[in-house]
Image (cartoon, rainbow, N blue to C red; front, side, top):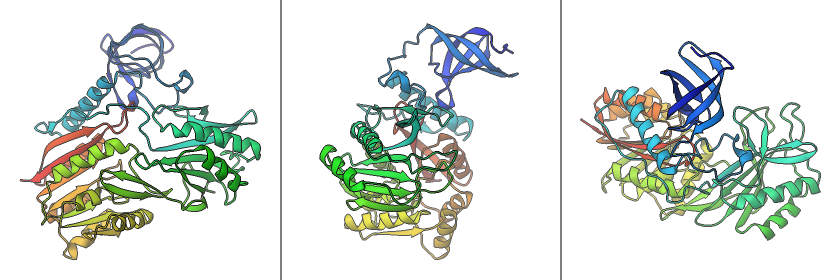
Length: 452
């Protein structure tokens, strides 16, 4: 056991959840925020337990050969977004691959699955098509940026190297708008003030830009003037929306949208398919890697013209429409009603009449469809981080599809669900990790299973 407030020389041997360095001091585990693999660092212990300690970096004695220079400003070091930006990008991919291997073995108890190397990006910067910036007032001036790690203290930012470049210009214009028209800024402690968040969405292939101002009320002043400035200065600016969120909540977007300029929509392509995106639509934030991810899902689905597919947790129908290019019929299921409306509209835009969408909880809708006689010989699931509901997995097993494709943003719940399916006759053959979020610790995966 190490002593609190004392300093020790620690060797970092791995990276754990949240990008925290896992260090060793004479065999004892020390977690160090900012520590990278093969760093030798002097650490001051801030928490000491029987089996582990937590410490802060005092000095880097020997830099890891994988440590690289940060590309974003030093002031953003604490923003919490790019936890491993200072780790060489190829090493980031290796870390993610190893994490998937360890989790599948440890939690899933599956040791005969082929886990491929993580597919990375050629240029892993400026890849995000969606940004959410909280707004606060400090010293009577508007601050737009990101929260510090584990807090709601705001770090001002003029640029972010993983967001689309257009955001740098938008932030400056919104700050000027706030100052020029004395727009009140929301205070989450008092629940007073109007402007809460700035949200942007960008169509990478179309260049179309949506700007959403999240407000604690239905009216913001001088929106026509703001739209005029945006139209003049932001290439591709298409729509300005006020999102109404009057709740005392950390949830960013409310349910009501008021269109101040344009039609409240932008479009973007994934492959040859075009999608309409609304303020509340879920659309993958990395369009380049989304195409990589979906093509791998399509490959694993191995669809023929007579195949019927269930796409469970389908969102706005992005994967459904990819699958519908090859399948005879696709049924999409999603709990968010607005997402299903978007999915139906996207099917119409792409002239696809072999897709049907159902709204409701997957664990209720899928068993009901099965009882009504709807069957699929291929099932695709893309659940939230908590993974699939057990009722959904049981219905999949009862339906006996030939193939299951599992798209996951959480290796731990993926491993749990693969183990569940494995016990019920579905063998996982391959997993392909895809780096959707460079410089963060998150990794997306596509798994291929078949009935044995």
